[in-house]
Each structure stands twice: as structure tokens, then as C-alpha cells.
Image (cartoon, rainbow, N blue to C red):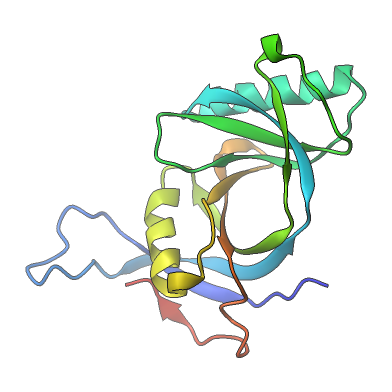
Length: 179
């Protein structure tokens, strides 16, 4: 069973003038943040440039690849955020696959695990929101963050940060801002 708690998380505004003290600017908006347990999944992936258009095209190509081979897809596509200008777009499928190396498609198994998910952001805002989430959860982060596309594509989505345990286990947290 998935444990979930609603939480408002302030995001940082523009970073150009943090102030003379070096403190970050005040939060500009709030975003829903919750703890969830993601299921294990078999994924297929392909490399793409880190632009919304290229990511959406890669996701379409992966869905097409899966459909022509009879593999139903699950959920929305996602990318692992590693700071590179290119990345791998992932789509979960219902079965194990063995793609031919010449296609550029690779398959792997993603283990089940806990995540802190923050929704309602653009792909460009994800980096600032990620800093705020990491400030809040500290040493509980346990792997590279992922950006999951919305229904409309990679222009908007949800940031998933893998965690070792539920950072909100003591009960629903009080409202805080990422500072």
C-alpha cells in the first residue's frame, strides 16, 4: 500500500540576486509534494537531446517500437536527470524485451522504491525544484532524480526523487518552504 502525504513545497525564484547575505530568494510558488512507492518496472530507453521536442519524439518512437513488438506500455515516459545535454528517455513496458542493438533501444529493469514526487512544473523549473526538495529531505535521497512527462508531454511534468525512507513518516508535515 502506498503511503502518501500532501505537502506544499516552495520553489526558488530566479537565482540571479540571492541577496547580500547569500540566502536564497523567498519562495515564489508552491507545488504539491508527496511520498509514494513506485513499482518495479521493465523499461526500454533511447538517447535524446534534452529539449522538450526531442524528448517527446523519443517517447513516441519508444511507444511505436513497443507497439510493433506487442509490448503494452505503462505510465508516462520519463528521463533521468544527470545534468547532461543528452539523456535517455524511458518508457515502462509490461514484459521483458530484448531489443536489437542497431535500433538504439535498450531494455533494463527498474527496481521498486520509495520516491518523493513533486508535481506541476515545467522541465526547466525541475532543477530549481530539485534543489529545494534535496534541501528538505537531506541524506534520505538515494538515487538520480527523474522527470516524468505530463499527459501533454515533456514540457510539464512531475519530479521524482528516490529516497531511502518516508521523510514524512512522523505524520503530515507542517507547511515549509525550500530555503
